[in-house]
Length: 316
Image (cartoon, rainbow, N blue to C red; front, side, top):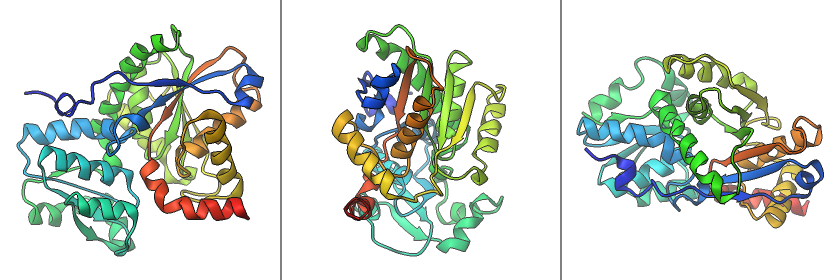
């Protein structure tokens, strides 16, 4: 049986783009951006890699459809709906909060995803053992995917990024790199990269939410499931006051970085992750000559709903 990844053409070489920014030039630290945002206009970023093992599993059991959950700006549900449409599989989305219209929700509906709004209390029940029971009864045989494409299958899908990064190094003229740097939402992608690296390179995860979201425990659990020690990585708080919170400094940083570096950023994940990297670089955490891979995890579709707020912050 062929893999979903091959069928949809996601096995092409990955793009590593050298990043030219003044604070990097002053430090002597080299950064290349792994442009997963360029992977596909609908299935961009790390979302595809978190989905691929789930989709292979759904195919192996001939699941008649896919069901998962997320918020009204969810990059995960956006990718899932697009994947389901291409594979000819019905999709169901269980959404946080009450019915609203966002650019993401419009895409989900346009791609045929059946939406159910759970409210906030209902969504908080997603980690209870009985959460999926009524949905399995309502959609018999549908393959259930954890929030954000998480779980061990999600991590193992991301582990496959490591050899593909290594294969792309020649495009930079690099023989090696010193560490990976990426945003950490649920920690699934980070755990996958740690699994894939197997101790060869350190992995830094910039938390998109506060430490109270217990991403550290989630990463440790995924590594334990994979039979690996909980080591080889570092988590740092990059949330700037909370998940999805923006300020003028962040908005201006996005504008300046895009103008100078030519890499688009989203305000929830990649922009805060880049700001955290600048802080570490400027404080001398990395010596001159260090080579880092910044993993662009996508998420740009979610920026559509935030653009107005970002512009107001810049305008003052």
